[in-house]
Image 1 (tube, one colour):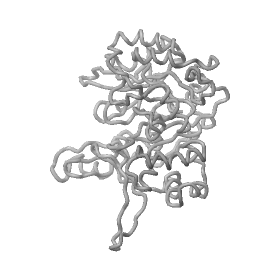
Image 2 (cartoon, one colour):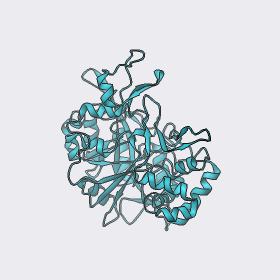
Image 3 (cartoon, helix red, strand yellow):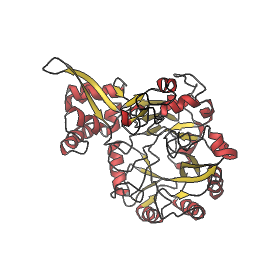
Image 4 (cartoon, rainbow, N blue to C red):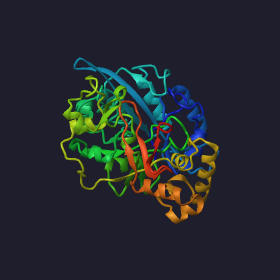
Length: 422
């Protein structure tokens, strides 16, 4: 399940991000449930009504006139709340889930009072987080609100530049209504487990994708097991946090993020949280303040040691998009390259979808299709045996898969920048 993405009505989003493309590429990826995204935008909601049909009164939708579709849509959106708090302007992004297109329309009627819904697929609303929760749940108790990409430096719950130091500080008297938190690309479950306050919420992951291509769609996701396939069952699984229902999350290693370490791009300086704290956040080259990384921000708020895991919590796995791996291994340069797609297609045709390749296919089986080198890298990624050069101050992290010797005998590291799919 990837329950947070965007439509073509959001800024910096592919104009081909429509219902049919999302459904088609979600099936290739191996996703069963995807968010519609952007139900707050009137034109997108109109398209959703025209192109989707509810499946068996489940609160989930399928593409109209495609009875054999294996991809189900959950009605979702993201909103940006802007407000003043203790003399500072706060900007926080939230995800909203709703059980039907009808309740989505009702939510829109309420939220339109706080800002223009036509301006962007992710509207900016002049209201506070607790008020957003209150008015959204007044429409339907089955609606869900939770913080989006919780650690991103800008526009997030714990963001270093405009966020809060606790979930309760942000949502105040409505914090008891928040039962989920989205990691975003900049954090993973172990980072969040260090905050004891977050024991009461379920850690989930979604792509926040602005494109239907499978190296963006589903790059982060959730693996659930529910008895009855419905909106209510999914929500209850997330609410419970039961590892028998939320089996694990798919995560991008947060070191790939462009704000993982603290650093100063202008001076080419980057460092882990421990070093940044020793330097007082000051660049040792120029003496200016460095951009605080997510790792350091977690260190500021953590009340538990690194490596701590609360009992009875869902697991996680670090993965990379298959097409990105193949583009690197075969030197095709880009996941969108025609040759990359040819190799990608052979694997998907053999195993059924991308997730089955990344999570289930055996080394020997993969090697039969694409050779031993590619098979080894796919398995190494699956088992978290790859190294990462962490990102900092707007510079994306780099994947270092192996070290080889050139003809000169000097070691040469092969590295891959993940900017194409981030």
